[in-house]
Image 1 (tube, rainbow, N blue to C red):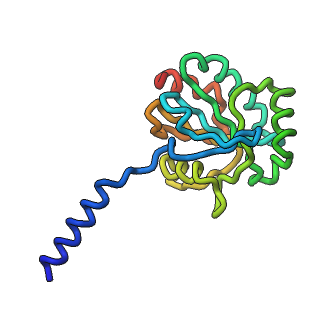
Image 2 (cartoon, one colour):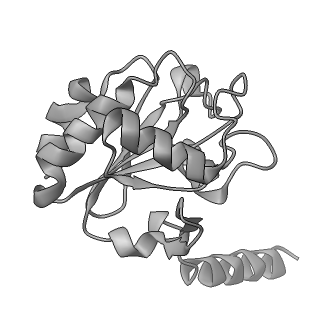
Amino acid sequence: MLKIWLIMIAFTQFMMAGEKKMDIYDFNVTTIEGKEKSMSEYRGKVLLIVNVASKCGFTPQYAGLEKLHESYHDKGLRVLGFPCNQFREQEPADEKAIQNFCTVNFGVKFDMFSKLEVNGDDAHPLYKYLKSEQTGFLGTESIKWNFTKFLVDREGRVVKRFGSTTKPEEIAGDIEKLL
């Protein structure tokens, strides 16, 4: 009986050794214009992934995110904004209105995506992955508010998570280390 058990364990380990662990490039997202995009298009880039909202006390961070985009885009940074309406319905608009708001008020040129959920059963798989790779305060996975930021290195590793109160300019040093 012990021999059969050991054979089963060895077989299971053999089978699992061939399985590839998911990484950030395995996900697809939808642009704010409604086109599907593979995250693999960002391979080799440093990513700053942010859940955003237009009617939030942290909305002025759009300006700082755009400044990071302008300062580091040519060196390989990509800022990715994902609107989310899960926090007191602070992103009620549709994608066209969100895009217009960001362009008119903050001159946003970084990549923006369709609205998605970041918490709960309907959380987008990308966000489930991000949260599992970098937990929040006291090891919690759930995102507490808008403008939570995830920093991803050129190899696709989620290296750091920043809360809503961390201003984009405070992340510049961490970004520079990865560029």
